[in-house]
Length: 93
Image (cartoon, rainbow, N blue to C red; front, side, top):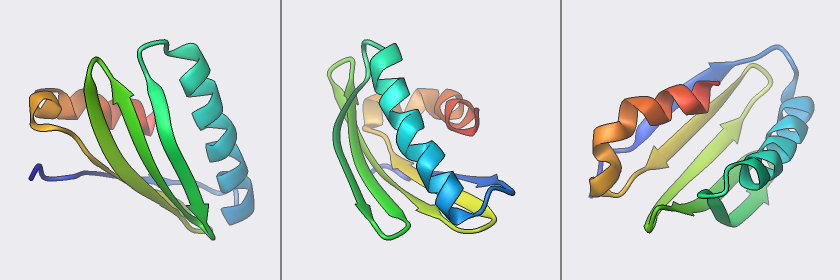
């Protein structure tokens, strides 16, 4: 199994606003990146679990939202491990 990529993103929005922006950002990402498909998106309280596919590969992950940060954890298939740094940068932006 691949080691997860973990990114902590600090914010000053508060938990509710961060969740709202994350939900709208996922919808925009799916619409603006044709090779990216969000196959599953499930929210339970402040935790998002998701499954993404693109280029014939599937990645899974979760995001935990608090009042001060968002912790994103993504598990890439081994074929995409070589671009892990690029993925971390994309998550942060």
